[in-house]
Amino acid sequence: MTFDERRTRRQVVKAASAPVLRSISEIAYKKRSWPCIGTASPIYGRKAVKYVRKIFDTDISAKDREVLANYLAHALIGHLFDGWRYLSHSLLALISGARAKSIHLAYYAELRAALSILATGGICILDNTNFSLDENGDVHWFGGRTHTAVWTALQAWADRDDIAAQIFSSFICADLSGVDWARACDPSGTGGDIPKAWVEEWAVDLSAIHEDQNARNLASYNPDLSKNIFSPVNKKELYLLTDINRATIAVANGIVRDLDKAIIRQLCEIYFKRQAHNRNRFWSAIGNNLQTVLGYTKMDARQKINALRSPVARAAQKVMACSNGPTGIEAEPQHLICRALMLLRLGSSLVRQRCAEAATLSSGMPLRWRDALLTDFAVASQAVDEGAALADALAVDIAELQALSEVESYLAAEPDLASGNSLWKMLSLHLVNLARVERLGVRAIA
Image (tube, one colour):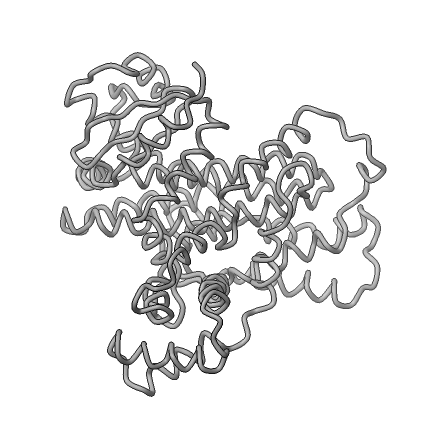
């Protein structure tokens, strides 16, 4: 089937999250362990592709539409689990010196994050049998192989007028979402294309990320004939590992404190640059708008401004800068890794939002469904012991803190890394602990 970009965009514009929310609220009542469907379901196991291929581009029954919504309800969190695991394995490959494998795995972390994000909006990319569900649950079919359709669909999704607010609300600083900060920056909405520009530039250029497939192709299908193919892990790569952990170590109620702050600061900077204010007057105006538009007292507004203006953690800044690095064949593993992290952060927040919205339809049951799945994922990822509660996975991980301290201390004290095997003997347990970012996924979704 020839890829039709215009049709893809048309069908994405029609998509809505409502059918997915209804499905989450319904399946949460029936079963709270994975998978939340019976073995007789036509999408059980890996049967979804065959099932959708059979009904693709036909007029389908109400029952089939219900099954498709059910699939998306599972896909939005299933893709996210796999994405966090791909990222973890990409980091493990990097610290093992397997850079091509790291690129391969990081690309698939990006891909799975994108598939999850699209699923939260009622869009499914399923290898040439793609579809979207509209507000009424009606299906709209479109073709396109996965690695082409997913990035076109993601760009079309981001271009929609209603999406900026969804993305803005995914990040929080000083108890204010990005939506609130955007209103404080531009209460009259005179900023024109700023929301759209921010969606495109927020840390991942959504118009260019499809080029990372070229990096994956080179890494996956070609031998590396460069000089450094067998070079052991270097300091730059180890600092990436510590930066990711340092930037994401403070997580509570789905808020990744330092990373979210860096993202919202970037949003405000875009407003500042477009509106050409004096910087002090710009921040003063935001403080006034927090009072007049959002109803905060002068003292509360000042505290929130100070919280946002205080120095952003260097690790978060470095991760943000890295995610904006080269795409495509010029990209290095760290660029794909950081972009994958940012996309997974966004996907986790959107899944968290969808479960909260679905909970309003069914007395909170979807939140218990989500928490049960997160607990199972934490156990499977060896983040907690079998039989542990979700609270155990959300608690401060002493081993993670110790690993971060040990590796950072080593990097600060040693001008040169020990030889590969000696380094591995000294730090292997700590390095593996830092690469196990599945626990971050659990915290970001919960």
